[in-house]
Structures are given as C-alpha cells and as structure tokens.
Amino acid sequence: MKTKYLIAPALLAALSTSAMAADCSVNIDANDAMKFDKNEIVIDKSCKEFTINLTHSGKLARNVMGHNIVITKTDDSAAVARDGLAAGLDNQYVKPDDARVVTYTDIIGGGEKTSKTFSVEKLVAGQNYTFFCSFPGHVALMKGAVSVK
Image (cartoon, one colour):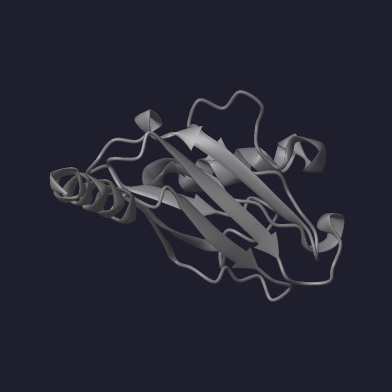
C-alpha cells in the first residue's frame, strides 16, 4: 500500500516534466503566392537542437516557385540573399560555406516537404535574426523574425 503512494508522485513529476518540455521545432508552410504562414520563429533557450519543417502547399515546381528557409543575423540577411543569387538553384540559392548563414533548408517545389535540424548553440539570445526564402525575388515578401527566449 505504501509503495503505491511513493510511485504516484514520481510518476506525476515525470509526466509533468515531459508535458512542459520545450517544443524544439516549427512547422512552416509556403505557397505559390510567395507567403509563409508564420512571420516569427521563437526558439526556447532550453532547446539544444531545433528543427524546421517546411511544406510547400502550392503546385508550382521548385525551379519556378521554389521555397526554402535561410536563417541569418538580421543585419546580414540582405547581403546573404544577394550573394545567394549567384550560387544558383543547385546550391539552394545560398553561397557555399557562407559563414553568415546559421542554417538553411533545401529549395522545394509545390507538394514537397523538407526538414532541417541545427544546433541552437549557433544562436545568441538577444541577437536579432531573420528567416527568409532565398529564391530570387522572394526575400521581399517571404521573411520573418527569429528569436531565442
């Protein structure tokens, strides 16, 4: 009888800890109208790794209306997008080995999905970060804020 009373609090504590664990991922949808369904990504500072799950709900092919997500410091985003143009589709419109890029997903077309997991250690709490699509011309409409809290 006493064992039952000792196990119950331990079980409740374990269940509440898992229920309160940070969600270390985000689901973002992009479409043929050059829009993301989110304008902010908030990463819990307790996350060691974070996963971006990108879905393209449109119908157009990746070479016509492809989308990806690139994360950089906000001050670097315009230059990274500009430099990505020369890198081309084969490089996901991201300059190879660009140290300014925190992470990026592959370019996907309509009906496709991709994911990217990266180390949160690359981000500094309090620093301003931006996510954007690096497909040519998309950065003007497809961008948002990234924060670590």
